[in-house]
Length: 96
Image 1: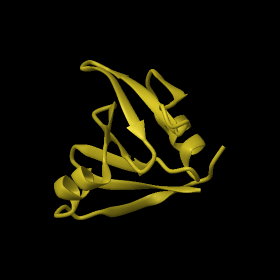
Image 2 (image 1 turned 45 degrees about the vertical axis):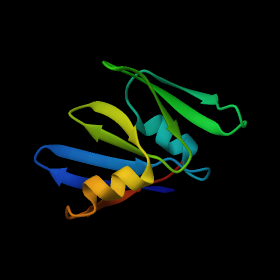
Image 3 (image 1 turned 180 degrees about the horizontal axis):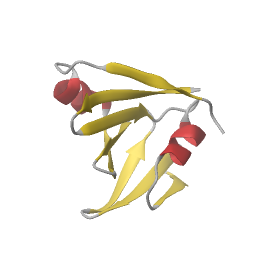
Image 4 (image 1 turned 180 degrees about the vertical axis):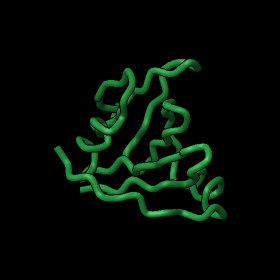
């Protein structure tokens, strides 16, 4: 199970954290061209195709969905950008 957080509802911005426990669910939550891979330390990563090129999400990163586009943010940047916004609980989605 993993949480999808609603950061904003106008425009809709959602976030899910990519962890060892949520990696499969987060991968299936992303509705764009992406693929699972491993980094140099054999840790799981997700590579996300975007207009800016291929973006890489590492364990602990948040995947942001905004306007049907996806991008990763490390936890520090996530807290910096979204800590001041009201976080609404959207729901729990069971893993695959």
